[in-house]
Amino acid sequence: MMGEEVARSQATQDEVPQVPPTPGPGLPAQAVSGSGQAMVEVDPTETAPRSGRSGPGGGNGGSGSQVQNLLKGGAGRNVGLVIALVLLCIVGIVTAGDRFASTANVLTILRLAAVIGVVSIGMTFVITGGGIDLSVGAIVALASVWATTLATQQMAADFHWIFMVSTALLVGAACGLVNGLLVAYGKIVPFIATLAMLAGARGLAEILSDRRTQIISVNSFVDFFGGSVLGVPVLVWMFVLVAAAGWVLLNRTTFGRRTFAVGGNAEAARLAGIKVQRHTVALYVLLGLCCGIAAVMLMARTTTGSSTHGGLYELDAIAAVVIGGTLLSGGRGTIVGTVFGVLIFTTLNNVFTLNNLSISAQSVAKGLIIVIAVLLQQRLAARAT
Image: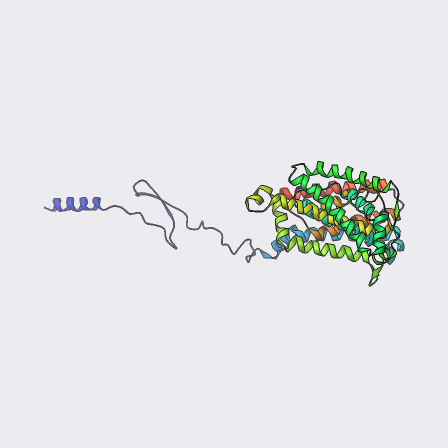
């Protein structure tokens, strides 16, 4: 009897399924294999790190990591540009003394930086959007010539000097529109399309002016743009306004966000609903308008319109944009960095001139600075990846 009861009890236990324990809060996790009888325990001490701690100091990363992240971003790049500008000023003071540190020389630097600075602001948008423009100098020349023809100046004298300004802006915008259409809808590489515009615009400027320098006879135009406000030249105020408007447009508007998106990945931007071709055309038109403004400023500074205006402006603008931290491949741009880049190159040219160094030496220095800046960009991009 007892043997039969023991046998039935054992059979009943065999029929009850063995349910493996499930890990719960505070319990070690278990890996179950087969029927559930072979189980391997995981060491309960091996837990994931808490999200609130990222280092031995606890907290949210510590002040050290926050400073490192700040220096790796745009603020860090701007600090480096400020340091470079200060070092250049120190070199200028040491080598040229009062000739460099005088108020008149500082205003000269700002006046020279204003013209190329306006072009560089427009170039920042185009390069951030994944393009490039080699024709900016030729567009400036064509706009200055067209706005200073005898017919244009006569109409400006009869009505208002605003007619000359409007002509320069319209010529610049038209050239930018042609560049944008060739790149966006003609599917021509920006390098080739703008190179063709460089040759065409410069040639047309020579035809219109007959290769002669056209003197501005509208005194009201020269008086207005050649004057000063609060002791600062009007040209410098124009540069400040264009830079401020460019910063707002790039960083605080939908247009700016679309520019970053198109430059970062044009196909992804298209799939996201952005009209990439239309936006590309708008970027080149914007740069053309900046070239028109620069032409007006150059006309006021030199009181002339000439087919030789804007020589090597494309080199200076691209160099300032790259030094400022804008990626040549597109997708990242900074107006503040571009402004510092313009000031650095203009100050460098001024130091070279005051020390009687040749223009050839200035060009060599610019080339070296551009190469170093691009190499640093590539290295930083590789680290970020």
